[in-house]
Length: 255
Image (cartoon, rainbow, N blue to C red; front, side):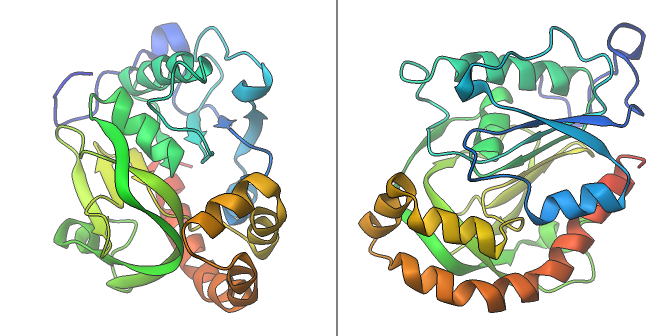
């Protein structure tokens, strides 16, 4: 990608208008759906559809009719192209959306894939960050429209062992005790969140019970059932924050 501070040109004449209301949601595992973010999409009247590349579904050939892109989390690494060939295809598609000036929102793996598409390195971290833990907004984060006027520290859900370098010309919005990179903004309409604001009690319950994710959690030294027991209070407290952050994001997108 280019290094420009501003968002790149739109290719409306070739790819359809940014005002299109149908958004594409790239999902990497059935467990990690939109969750609370889905409620905001419905409230904003944003039509969307899931696309599951790991299951063999194909990306559209162009961006006509796609108003924006949401890239969700998953258990694979952004750099594991040999094991998961679809990652290369998905990264190119994300880059295409960025070049066309489309809004792009990424969560966990999704944030890493956006960073990768922008030319940043994604790599294994020193240790896994799993469970409920605080993130602190940076000065840029406190000034960002999505978080302005809110709390300077948020206890959020983490489920990752990889991290990323800050993409060129991006702003680091949040950090944690373990990782400097927890959220970024590139231009006006591109955001990546390493942590999860969207998780519901149901999503956390499924992650704690399904063998692969349960093993991942246990190997990080965390009791999956403790995460489930703590979920209700944390999700309830984060629901208003999630509503504010994502509503403001779609407002910035003109929706």
